[in-house]
Picture 1: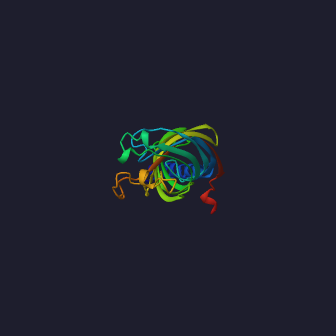
Picture 2: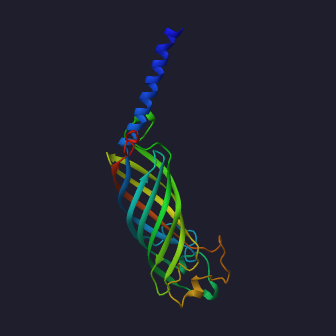
Picture 3: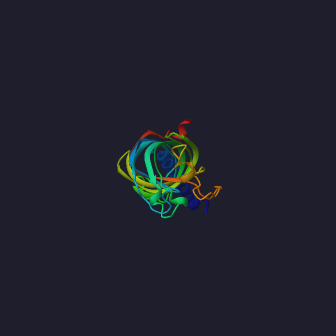
Length: 236
């Protein structure tokens, strides 16, 4: 029994060693970081547009940095800017005293998001079930600044979905759609004189979940991966 058991022990040891080496190589060869740019469109939803997506779209763009934790999870930091606008006559409702108003803002935001890939994302290691494409979901937190006579500064909560694909080694392309929930109701109030029209036009005070403004990004991005993971067996 002892003699016949030795090959089994050796085989198990060799298999375990192979798996450990494979995992180490995966960590050593996968790139940790991505950097790139995005371009697309932005639109607003609020008192001047309650239901219609992509109404009066504006241009948007920005820079992003992504830290890939593993095949499924990433942390993304982004700086984005865009133009949004709205008109009360497009709101779908009649405002008191038949008031009509409009606004236009240029916004900038800085935020961080956690991303979850549905598929293990890589163009290598097919034996681990990886795929060079994946849909993903994300959410996080950010801050928004917008121009106007009444400057707007507020926090936002972004959430959305996307799809990314590896064009080739180290290069990724993707598209994502996101909504940004704001904690203020005066994003569409760009002048001190139009506060009565677009800031609580019905005289109903806002709450955490009621009468808050939103804006949205639809972006196509291109990123480049860099810095390979160091082999943990070397103590780095």
